[in-house]
Length: 283
Ligand code: PLP
Image 1: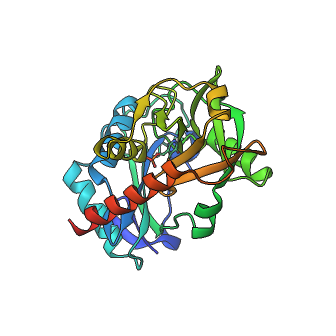
Image 2 (image 1 turned 90 degrees about the vertical axis):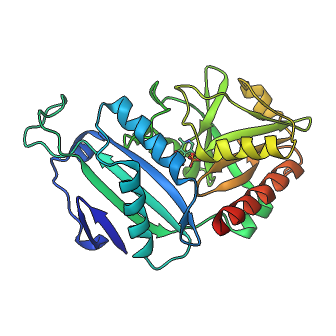
């Protein structure tokens, strides 16, 4: 596949960065994963706005204006073979020939874009629903930033894989935060509940889409702190993300969620999400 690295478009196999890059040494970088449907990036402005806020919190000047980012994204999409893609974008604080935690005096950020074929959940997985385990959320206190420092997320995802499951649902101090790589929603008595945005979770682009679709379609919904017990006794639990879209979790820690099948509200939301994607693709 074709990627972009620091001003050049080149085959991914040929792309190289310095081992002194602060992304490699410290995980000192920001990233985004943008779904592309029929060669059109979905919610691009929102992804670029989230990138800008991660960079601002990192005190790393945004190396490109929004229109420049959009042009680079379009170029990488056009130069790759798939209609539906998962576009990855990363900015690090670049290389410095002295290893030093403090920022270099002159920062030359590394900018990298690549793309893969978009793989959304299979029909079988959507029909059975996903399985999840739970774990204590031991990440840091700025989970609202989409940074490449992902060791905790990697350990938490592997915790699920080790148990043959798809995702790890995280609880901090007895409250639901999110999944290791997804936002989590629950349904109780026909009401969709989402945890409020805070420093303890990523502000998901899909999370926003789901709440917009709930509002537009008149689905009762509330944003409020969700207790661990409320998740365990919920009628439905879902995970959402740019690549998993809306996916029901039907087993949590080996016990069925609700009836152990994807519930009606998740199926309705999945259908709204697919329809919404299609209108944006045509527009
Ligand atoms: N939370 C975490 C920790 C994530 O890594 C992700 C993205 O994969 C999400 C939530 C979902 O975010 P989005 O809907 O923007 O893909």
